[in-house]
Image 1 (cartoon, rainbow, N blue to C red):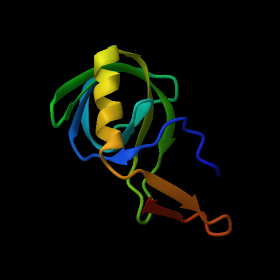
Image 2 (cartoon, one colour):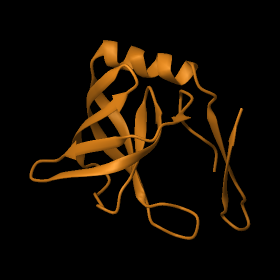
Image 3 (cartoon, rainbow, N blue to C red):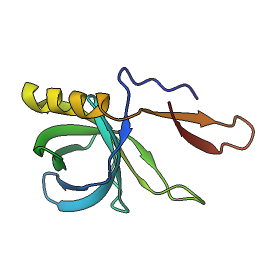
Length: 123
């Protein structure tokens, strides 16, 4: 399964507040890039769900509107969560995310085609 992201992603573990049309819930970020964020949460949402997001970078909060692009169920060694693509984000916030990502080594995911096991490594 090739990584189709257009920008590198890095680990960041911060609380993410998410609001949909009728719900407020939170999760813990797993990784972030200028294009989106993975949020570890047991609160399932359907692909296509729009969410308002707030999470903190070291230099302050980021506000964005995103859409759930993929979901991940809990299994051995893998936390459940949501892959969220940013749809609306201020240019300054996107630039802050890009600067944050450039300052940290990116993650690379390898998937063993036979076992389906995910291995995470840094550059």
